[in-house]
Amino acid sequence: MNIISKTHSKASGHEPNDIKETDFRNSVVRYEISRFEIEQSFTERIVHDLRIDKSNPLVYVGPGNVVFFASGYDDDPREIYEIPEFVAFVRKACASSPCWMYFTAPESLWLQTVAFCTLKRSHISGSRPGYRTLTLSICEAMGFLDSQLDDYGRLCDISKVSMKESRKHLELAFQGFGIKLP
Image (tube, rainbow, N blue to C red; front, side, top):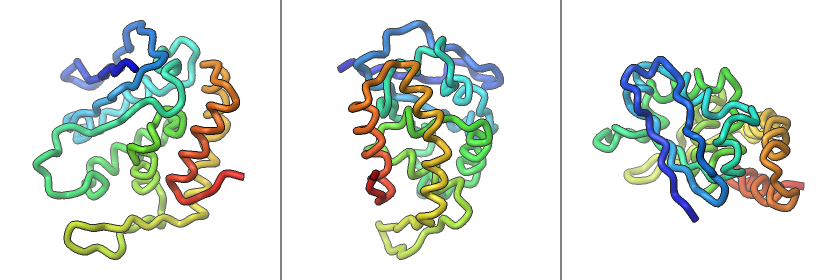
């Protein structure tokens, strides 16, 4: 398994940068989103990199093989979803409807973090030192997942993912929300 890092190389953050032609098959991509991009709300790069387009090489990594992370917050005592600039960044990126479900590695919990930042009835409950419980409305979570299914199917078609592999990833994505896929 190849591990490929995708980081932001332009300081301005204003221009999307293309991912160089790479054979992403059988790879895990570490996709870094910089604190600078987050605080300036520069979503152009991530929206560009997650586009549904057969010329987008990141599509060929296949479902669940991108691990997203926000860099520059290691010394911040808050959880990433408690940082207002991060929440605003995610909401702005989501306005362009990227298919997080397709790209996100289920075990990374990024999909749940995006949902938590974008759903209206999400909140933190049962907080005690060292532990937090994120609460999502099951109806809103289902709506969030459902809103991504058509694009998920299109991306699987583009990348020629087998039905078995596609279903396996969907099951993991839904399980992350405590939902059993029928």
